[in-house]
Length: 142
Image (cartoon, rainbow, N blue to C red):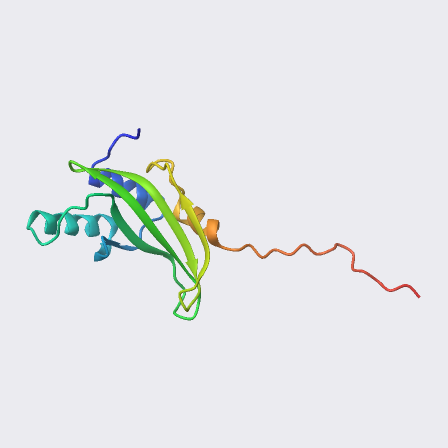
């Protein structure tokens, strides 16, 4: 089992891996990774939110190029135990501009250290459309 990490270390490692965009914790509390989690925990402390019985849900975009282009969205399920965090599962989904799922990848049994970088996660769901072309074109014989 992975050692649980404090919020600063957890956020720093994921930020170094390229997860440096804005996230939502439990569907609200928008902000950078550490700020979003901190705001959520502060609201829990003040009684505005309650701690989940299961994992914390962190949601963010890994790739967004405009409303008319496909997006790549990442959901991280994070175990929170007595002020410490560990990454359990990651879901990366590529959707078209209408919200239709194009491709999805689920990564389980992860740790913060073994998690892919943001660019690797995007590559999991991007379709590489490399078509091999023949080096010599086909010719007609007369």
